[in-house]
Image (cartoon, rainbow over all chains, first blue to last red; front, side):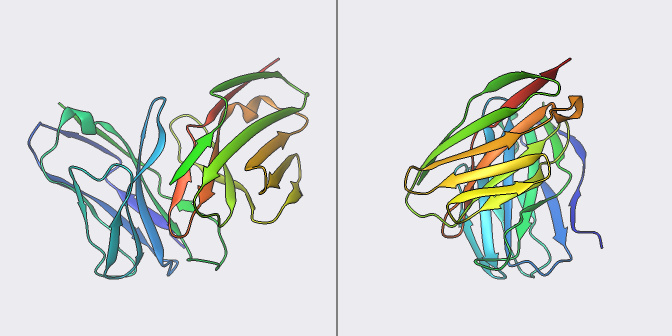
Amino acid sequence: NAGVTQTPKFQVLKTGQSMTLQCAQDMNHEYMSWYRQDPGMGLRLIHYSVGAGITDQGEVPNGYNVSRSTTEDFPLRLLSAAPSQTSVYFCATRPGQGVGNTIYFGEGSWLTVV
Amino acid sequence: GQNIDQPTEMTATEGAIVQINCTYQTSGFNGLFWYQQHAGEAPTFLSYNVLDGLEEKGRFSSFLSRSKGYSYLLLKELQMKDSASYLCAVAGYQKVTFGIGTKLQVIP
């Protein structure tokens, strides 16, 4: 049981480049989210999804795009990378509203934009 | 929206008890989480409270008062490996919002 698989673990991008962070889960969870974590800021919600075909913005969505075509996958796209997007990114899943409430995290992706 | 407050840093002695407080203001409440996060790692689940009261799990206990918008995490018999950040998070209708985390340093 892989749980939440997040790739890549480390990435260096040049300003203006685009890339996709992948997140896959095999637990059939409805809810999936992307957070970024910066020193002194805690985990901040970028985008989230409550099911296939449904996505919504979190606290810091600008510069990021998501889609949820299947229950299993929730990729995060950086459209034109900026140094301000240097951060650690975590994908998180949970079963759904009122259905067991543990949040499962991927191992994280360390992104540096130069 | 959600507003979550917790202390930024705490220091405690090995073998002692420490209480980490979390206060929140929310427009919708569906439970409160506590997570532990060691440096360079992903957060790991400690507890989830949806009803008022104390829930005990080994050395860790978590308390919730919904009317006061208040929770605490109690760590007993502190060990050096408990040095980590402790994240308080509130589940709203669909989103989960995290506090900035409390960095706990356990000293000998």
